[in-house]
Image (tube, rainbow, N blue to C red; front, side, top):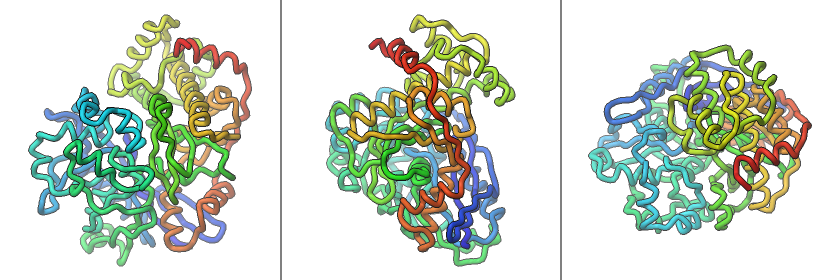
Amino acid sequence: MQTYAAVDLGASSGRVMVGRVGPGSLELTEAHRFPNRPVRVPEGLRWDILALYAGVLDGLRAAGQVDSVGIDSWAVDYGLLDADGALLGNPVHYRDPRTQGVAERVWETVPAAELYAATGLQYAPFNTLYQLTAARSSAQLAYAERLLLIPDLLTYWLTGEAGTELTNASTTQLIDPRTRDWSRDVADRLGIDLKLFAPLRRPGDPAGLLRPHVLQETGLTGPVPVTAVGSHDTASAVAAVPAAGERFAYICTGTWSLAGLELHAPVLTEESRAANFTNELGLDGTVRFLRNIMGLWLLQECVREWGGPDLAGLLRDAAEVPSLRSVVDAGDTAFLAPGRMPARIAQACRASGQPVPESRAEITRCILDSLALAHRRAVTEAQALADHPVDVVHIVGGGTRNALLCRLTADACGLPVVAGPSEAAALGNVLVQARARGLVGDRAAMRELLAHTQPLVRYEPCGDPAAWEAAESRLTGR
């Protein structure tokens, strides 16, 4: 067996997981978990990237001797380096409001339809393209010699070698999903200098060796290679979907829900753009055709405002609330910013003429019904837009621990739901490292290994499909 460290950074916490892989064997344990607390400073909302890096070093120390290290994280955000390789300030958080109104300015130069045809990326106000446009007149960008996405920045600090991993680069809205290379025409028209980006890497490519001072600080014995993985955490999570065959949909759940299909080619139609589906890149030339849904962020923000009540008890109470009494659009960017989430959900219900949820259980049930409805809409529309029917929905990530959400998603989609693994991003990270060293075969072999080694729970659909149809009509007016 060989041992791999998977650094998996989420929007609210980071962890270093240790994976052990051998013939027919896959084990994952947690070495270290640490908070990811953004900081609001006078300039706006920022990531505390130094605290995250310290957490990574602590995690590698706790992991012990490993054969390789891989890093995945959230997408779109970046750090800027000067000519000496020094970081020019903490990276801006994607929830910072600096991109408000920026998309409209971009579309004056590259109309939205042309932008989608060139990059296949859904509209989201925080896409890297819009962030760079918003930062155009900033002193930091003027002095920057290099731009590194978050996992690439941490890899650079560990190894001294700069690269831009492709699956994360595909979320910048500057990659052509057909050529899997930069969309130079888009960048030129918008005045974005692609020389800021380091050379592209693919999952499985070598990303350097841990620097001597990193070895000293972590207690590891070199050489220890760092391997490029699917550095967008969703790319790693999709790689760890334990599916058999290709007729499946996936929902990667956590702070966000990413719901869609794994395809062999992008879908760049005007219908796909109007439905706000994105074409991000995955392993082995695949495309992650999906829609971003606000996800369990809605519940996380409510729980934070309520002072951290017992989540298990809250979900038990929510299960007793009548279903589909009130629903909101879980993809609405009105819910993007932090703060006052219970009141904002209540206001959305009031504005749409629905009963206003008042108790914590009612608000929780509204959120979970709304997420299941959004999952249903995404899975249904993805199949039609891609002409790719599915027989099962795989839920991976933190939401697999929420049995009520999994059951409601099965009911809403009218399809069996297979839930697990919960640590899909870390497992995908580990398996790409293992595959780079010849321990695991192709994606099918990776998924077969997952299906045989990870605990999975199957939920069969039940209930009244017409009730979900009615809730959809009530929400959309169609």
